[in-house]
Image (cartoon, rainbow, N blue to C red; front, side, top):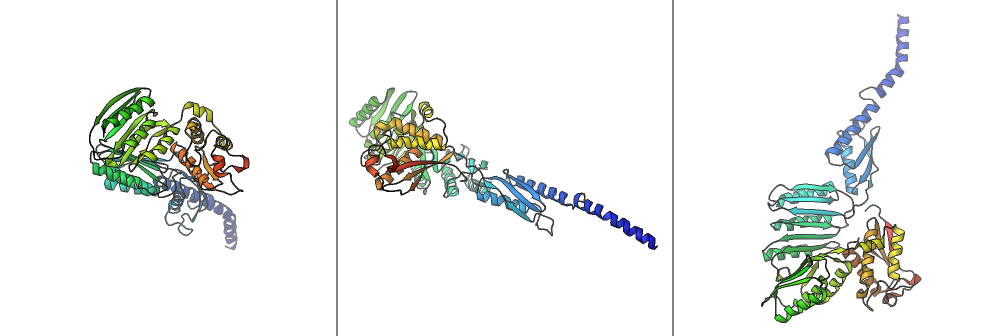
Length: 472
């Protein structure tokens, strides 16, 4: 018996290494199989949650999360999903004990565009980029509350949303769109544009006012068509003037402007009639001078929405000078320029594809030279510099596709106003708005240098810096 006990003990001792190996590698509770099971459940949970950017690797019961997250919130949400993908988690319950979050913020999408469309049957369709799954769900709830039918979700989560209350602006767009019979809203970068049609003057005024009152850094533009008092439309090489004007002299003046500035055919469908709107004809004359240089589009005066609207396509410099003149001539009436800036093939070829260093050099070269300058003592661009302004817009648009523009300002109040004017112009031309940075490296030449459009060496009061984009 004693010999048998010795043999049994010896066999048991020899079997221990095999049992240990089997427990670690072959048992259903083995470390390898546990890791594989936890990893599979984590991937399944991410898929069910609609998180397609994340990846998980297991180190024992520790999950390592990687991937390009559209936002910091999205990375935290993914970590929570992974942590609870196998139940309560922890060592005792055999689940994931902790998550090491190594996710990084993905490259921002440019341009960052979200859209909402209301169809003729009252359904809302949401599409484009949203900063997180939570925002996406909140917008669908908003749409479902105001839509006549089920809202359709075509949105994708992506990095690059501008700072500020992006979700609040998108929700406002949904509410304004719900007021219209049909229309669309687009939030591109920090600019919200609501388009639609309504014969209800009160509704048009309400939607226009609410959209135009959005808080900075966002800007709202409403283009709600009805029957304007007066309009000009340009298509197929013909410019048509229609609607009512206060007097015969006003009708002749508008026709004279068009025939002087426009090379194509002109059709006059205007009538002379008394209206309740006063003091708008000067704005029409100023705007029409520049509208004649559009490639196509529509200009209208509509007292129901309290002013002028401009749509279509035109050179960036034309839109700049239109804005300058309307500021002076519109009087008590507001104006909205929602036209798209054209960049001609010649300007794109002149700008070329360039890295960040070359972008900065090209833009600074134009500011240093006499190519782009300001009217003496003001922050208004010189009219004779239109061609150079269009080239500057082309360079900025190419540069801002993969880089962040920054304007370093070293000067007085006039110089700062001119830097702001440059930033406004580039944003209006379709480039990303440069960030303004006030710096000090000695006395600046200020207005004296920039009055000629040139800056001397180290005394440049405005200088571009172009940086690679990183994160948001």
